[in-house]
Image 1: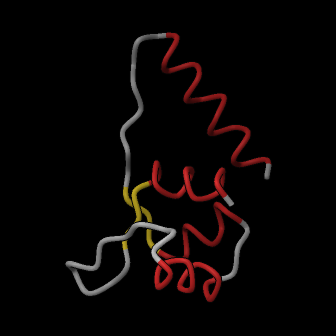
Image 2: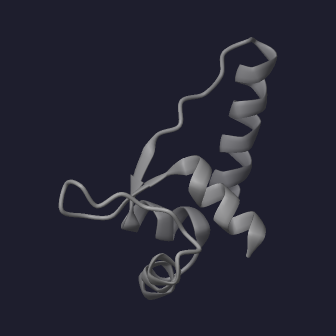
Image 3: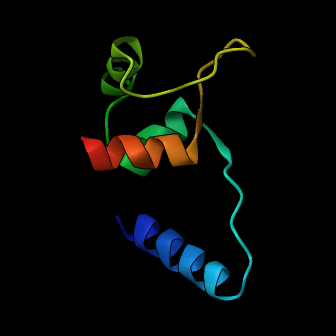
Length: 74
């Protein structure tokens, strides 16, 4: 939870300084840590189509903006 607050504050600071943060890719472990959700819940959301992902490289990769949208929309 604290990590998300610090990241959000860093993003606000970058925006105020006219430095837009990049939309980085995250793997399923990073999404689980970032969202405090289990890996099985993340995989279920992927199969239901509620969480967008890319699997071009043989593993699920998620854009941070898609993960944040998924968290906000429940």
